[in-house]
Image (cartoon, rainbow, N blue to C red):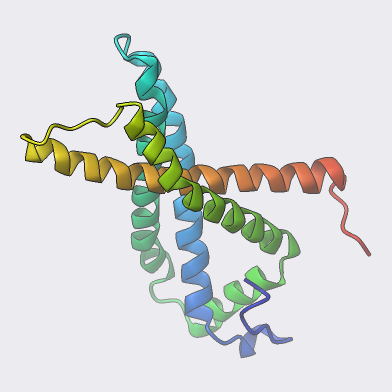
Length: 185
């Protein structure tokens, strides 16, 4: 985010402070919800003893997608509650510190790249699952057809959420595995 948004030398001069902080918080809500949904999916699969292997991928992707939406929505509600009554300088300072933090900017780049790759792969993943019959709906049942459309959206968001998580794991491997946690001087 620090490459596309102006970043002055002093926090008092930070433009777009509301946009920066809101974007950051919603992005973190998306990631947190994806992680929670990504954990709930396999747990649900294990607890359903009658579940077949063909429902594992759709179940995990759908719970990840729902978690991403719920995480984003909860952060959309939490940000105004947390920042209620704060002065403009506090918004500016928090936004400036986010842009100043090299580690945060690197995490943002990796997670956004992962989410984009996951989102671009979503149509292929959904098509594969439909081809396997995991989301089959009859033409007579319109409710099942609507559910199938909703399930496809959930799976698409789940692909982006999982991609974001993979991006963060890639960042951790790069920064702490390959680079040893050190920054080039």
